[in-house]
Image (tube, rainbow, N blue to C red; front, side, top):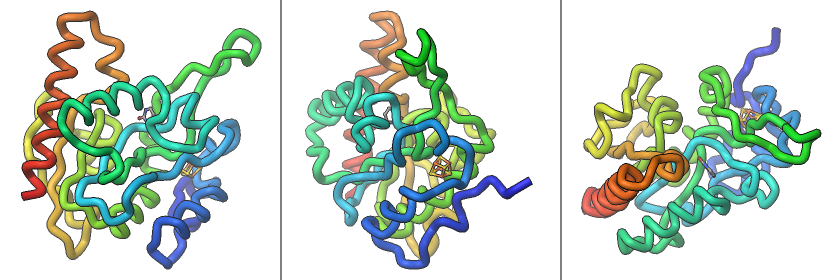
Length: 214
Ligand code: URA
Ligand code: SF4
């Protein structure tokens, strides 16, 4: 059985355009087979703050950009309310290909959560992005992103909004902190009073990431 990992596809040269080009050819797990394209990170490649989501959705898969669909609209609103210009950030995902189930004879593509094997397989791309951008603060949007960098035992419900240390193998030679918060899509799924509270938490956590920049 071939190894399930992106590692052999990651080039030695650490710059975002080279990484993005190489990731376009990644067959590190099965998810490249049905998605339209790799959705690599985008934004300021010298950003102080990096946002990490779960994986591209349907709209992202068609457009090749992270967070440009419904989840992206919530994220953009929260960034606006937090007084953050998205152009100053680097935005990426833990997994770079869209995982979905086709329904209605292939007309609708329903998001499926990536499994641990796929998250671990794709982790070399995320580590390469961290080593290239060298952010001071990493905002982990949802449990998948948090567990990719902090381990499978990490519980978002227990640690949301806390200032967390990243393990040394994720950002060698660099002091970076992380903050884990709700994924914008999870906020969309909540009933309304809970949704408003979760949205306010997201805005607070985004504001906190700027404070952590110092
Ligand atoms: N959800 C994510 O986690 N990332 C995206 O890019 C879009 C939706
Ligand atoms: Fe490679 Fe990640 Fe896509 Fe899997 S999801 S094929 S590891 S880029």
